Image (cartoon, rainbow, N blue to C red; front, side, top):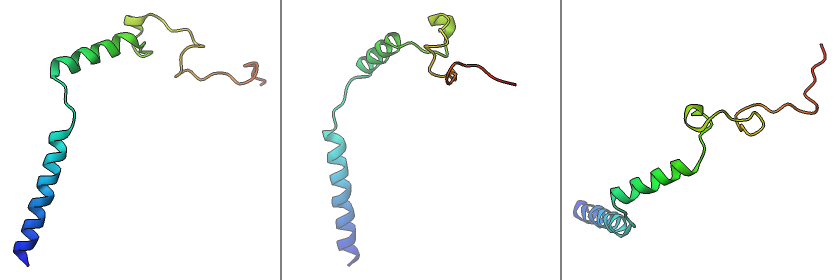
Length: 73
C-alpha cells in the first residue's frame, strides 16, 4: 500500500508540474514595460506631487456630501 500511495503522490506532483509548464509566460522586460505603461496611463490620487492636485468632486477617496451639503446645528 505505501508504494501505491507514493506512486499516486508522484503522479499528482507530475500533473501539477505539467500545469505550471503549460502556463503562459512573458519575459521580465516585457512585464516591466507593461507595468510602466499601466502606471503612466492611470492617475494616482495619492501622488499629488506627480499628478497635481485633484478636484474634490473627482477624488474617489473624498467623502461626497449627501444632498445640498448643509449641516444644521
